[in-house]
Image (cartoon, rainbow, N blue to C red; front, side, top):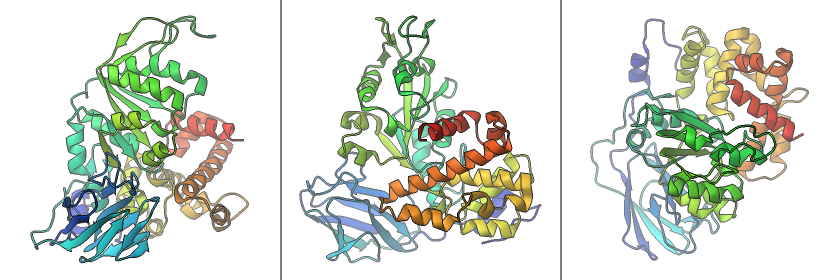
Length: 450
């Protein structure tokens, strides 16, 4: 872990000297489908672009029409001169040279088998190294890691377009910040920016919040009210946690998006709307579609483009940059977090991702060593190791186990924050370094799960 930058070293110098993209291979990897219904299909990877998704789903970069291949079967990525392949929980597994693998590094010359399809891996002719942008941020999204910067070209194109986008990633990876960056850097920047969180609205009010209602439509509807579609007219509607939306409402949402019109609850008038839809989810929508929990036609309508934000644990070098950034944003000095503290933070997995490191910085600025990470995140009355071991013992899939850890951390954090603020949500949210709306959402979710 590099030491903290001296006071006279600006962020540009820090990036250029320590995070120069030197690990992109000179010889890109070449993938050629040798057998199966898509024989002859080719793709090339050099590490300068986001990871490549392989599967039968329409949004996959290497789409295989083999009936034995899952919608999102595997992911391929170039790291440190190796082609990394990761099975994404496929139905029939991924094999390399006949060996079943979950995560493997390939050097070239291997044969990948998915379903009844074989894909040859080779190294293309050596060329100039692939290049990625050197910017340390994209809009509101901060970070200099290769994993983040290679998303910039795609994000630039999406920001200047008007197509629907689905942003995927774990809780706290910055999906809303990226969506707002698309809005602020795009053609609708002067229009409204409206957020609709599918997990923050009671089920009986979801339809009213989305499409609006007329006076008398239901008990308590004392006046006409615009829904989020009307509020976002000529702007952007960000639908957060779209994977949690009730299936019954998904059909009505699809109709509104396809026809660019809504019908307020309890009324007979049709309102034309002009909005760009950006959706986000922590769930694997391909798996949700396969399980029947998410409509296939809505998925296709929303996922015209997809961006997958990497978790913080995979963003090499970004912990130090984010610590400096949040220290300044919260009113402190960029070098307020000592180098030895940042070094400890570099070794932490950050299950809460960007949101968690912001909270850690806020705690440290307020409490110093009393707010160090290991003391602040351990659940009361038990060690972190014991708590995580209990979840691991349940034998859950990775995504479900990770959600349990994050939920447990959030629940304990909320309890402690409310205790410190005497039950005042506004003060607790301010101390936690998050918006009151988001803190209220966490509190309501915790109460509903009791």
